[in-house]
Picture 1 (cartoon, rainbow, N blue to C red):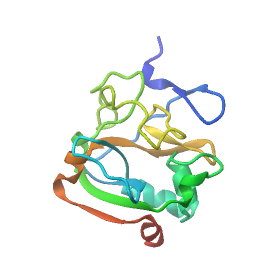
Picture 2 (cartoon, helix red, strand yellow; picture 1 turned 180 degrees about the horizontal axis):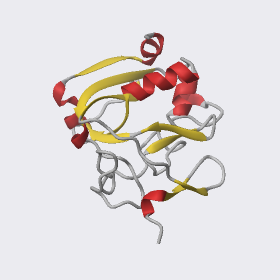
Picture 3 (cartoon, rainbow, N blue to C red; picture 1 turned 60 degrees about the horizontal axis):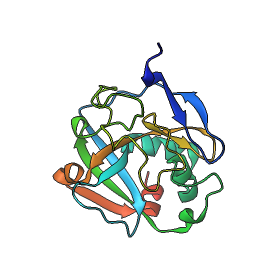
Picture 4 (cartoon, rainbow, N blue to C red; picture 1 turned 180 degrees about the vertical axis):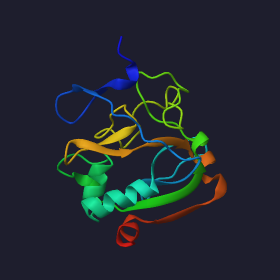
Length: 179
């Protein structure tokens, strides 16, 4: 039997099709992550955030371009054509976290299973989150909706855990303009 980690159902804006999940990258014990959200979005302490490593986000912006619409597509937060969400004001919240505070949103994987230094999420944190339906793969990374390719590795963390060591909030446009 093929391990469930290798296969998952990938759902896109078009017809659903099966695709093998790629291997997840290792994560160091201490990592800086970013949560991208609409400017007016507020959360409570136990709310699960979907975050990406700042290092990966900056590298992606360097190779793909510093454009808000393109970044939201790369994060799986906007449909292939961009849609209305790209016209909204967005913010980036940056946190310094420990890898053990996060989990990877993986479908058909036992919660707690180690995946590159980060456990697989327990239900219900393994499923889609609000605002990420376009690029949700169930593989621990996004689908770049514009290119129909693998996007960025994603993680889940509660606001309470993420904010425990402080955080920095800035408009997405400022983040994109910085080196």
